Image (tube, rainbow, N blue to C red; front, side, top):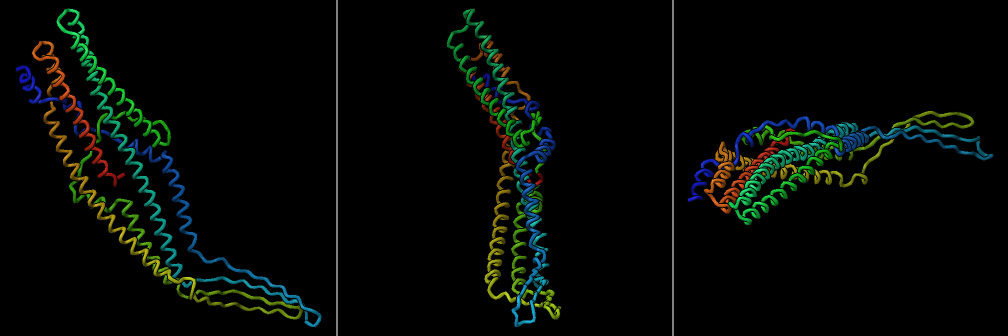
Length: 397
C-alpha cells in the first residue's frame, strides 16, 4: 500500500525538473575555441611546419644553377704559349616541365594548408568535447550536491528521532552509509571536473582560460542530405585527399615532360698568347636512363591516391550516417526523459512520506535510488547527444 502510494507520484512525473536541466540550453563556445586556436602549442608548431613545407614545395620549380668553368693550360717551349678557357653554361628543361612544376608547387601548398586545417579541426573538436564534458560534470556535481544536502537533512532528522526514541540505530547506519557513498561520488566527480579544466588550459597553451558554462550550446541538427553535402564539400581531410590525387595526376604529366630532352646554352672564351676566341655552347641531354620507371611510379601513386580518396569518401558517408542515426536516437531519449521529468518534486514527496511514516526506510531508499539513477541516466544521455552533435558538426570548426 505504501509502495503504491509513492508510485502514484513517482511515475506520474518523476525525477528531474526541466528548468534545472534544459535540453536545448544556450552556451557559446566560440571565445574558448578562438583562444585555443590562437594559443595552442601544437597548432603553433604546425603553422611553422606548414610554412617550411610550402617553401620546400617551391624550391624545385626554378632553373638549375648555372655552371662556370675555367681551364688553364700551360705550354712548353715548342708551343706558342699558355691557353686559358672559360665557359658559362645554363641548363634548361623542356618548357612544359616548368609549367608542371609551378602547378605542382601550388597544389602542394594547398594540401599543406588542408593538412594544417585537419589538425586544427581535431584539436578544436577535442577542446569542444572537453567543454561539453565540463558542462556534464557540473550538472552532475549539482545533482550530487543536492543528494548530499538531502541525506544530511535526513541524517539530522533521524538523529533527533533516535534521541526521542522514534527511530533505531539501523536506520541511522543506513543513512550514514548512503551519505558516505554520495560524498565519495562527489569527490570523484570534482576530481574529474578539475582534470577536464586542466586539460582545457593545456589545450590553450598552458594559459589560464575561464569557462563557466553550465548549459549546452543551442545546436540545430540539419536534415541528413544537407549535412552530408556540406560535410563532403568542406571537410579538410577529404579535400586534402582530393588534392593528393590531383598531385599524383600532375606528377604523371611532369614525369612524361621530364622524359623530353634537356638543353645547355652558354658562352665560351678561349684565350692564348696570340689570339682570343669567343663563341657559344649548345648541349643536348637525352634522358635514356635517369628517369626510367618514373612514369610508371607516378601512375601507381595516382591509382593509390584515387583509391584512397574513394575509400575515405565511402567511410565518411557511412560514419556520418551512423552518427546521425545515433543522434536521432539520443534526441528521442532526451525528449522522453524530459517529458517524464518535468515539473514534479519527487524528492520532496518522498521526504514528506518518510517523515509522515507512510513508507519505510527501505522503501524510501529503494525509490530514491531509482530516482537519482534515472536523473544520472538523463544527464549521460544528454551529454552523449551533444557529443554526437559536436562530431557531426566538426566540419564547421
